[in-house]
Amino acid sequence: MRGFVLLSSTLLVSVPVHASNIATDRPGNGNTAVVVEAQRLNAETGVLYTFVNGSDDHQFSFPVGLRFGIGEGFEARVITSLVGLQSGPTGGDLAWSDTALGMKFQPLQNDGWLPDLALMSDVFFPTGGGAFTSGVVVPEFRAAIAWALPGGLGLFGNLGADVPEDSAGRFARLLHLAQLNFAVPIGSQTLTLFVESYGRTSFDARGDFFQVDAGLMWLFTPDLQLDFFTQHGLDGAVADFSASVGFSFRI
Image 1: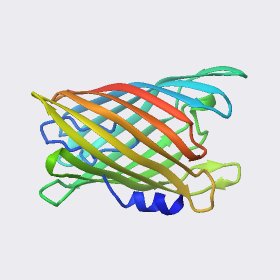
Image 2: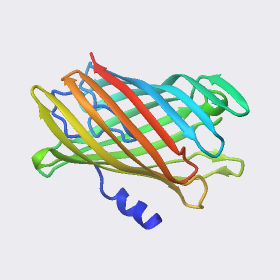
Image 3: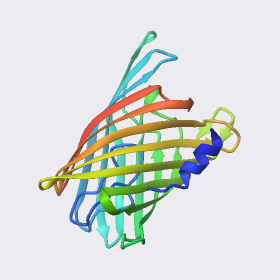
């Protein structure tokens, strides 16, 4: 499994977009390789359902991402969730989730075989409670890279690291995501289908997981995107099944 995970992390990928269209960090688990244009705001939200078979827990959360272009090639980011709801055999829990603050920089734009490339750093703060907090500050770093290929195909991926903490202390994990997507024009709109592999691999076998995701994005207008995706855990400490619907808009 590790060999496949490491191989998939080298197939770096994204949804092919034009500068005039909104480019979002959802759906799926990847962050786009495009920054928000200067003086514009992306609001990206939805509802996420998660099922954990081992504990028979059901969770609902409402992730929100706010991304603001602060200059040519730069954006500021806030990632949080309005509220989280968990129910299971041992009872229920209602709580806020952790919140991240971050920055993204895009040094390259897609031109032929030259990809979109973005570098970003997010710091997650323990503002949540119950099942919706890690309880500690967790920094995360990613590089995102994307190519728009002929025939509506696109490759997109993230490679990075985070530094969570458990009862034994801090440990580092490799973050890896690879996606293949296919865009279908429908009049003035675009429907994009994607499949991706996603995981985090620690260097001492703590906190590993691996999953596959699939979904679609409907670019309804240049400033409005609707989406749907599912996640299926294959290995490690990851939810057995998740599904999300959402929308993103740009002002």
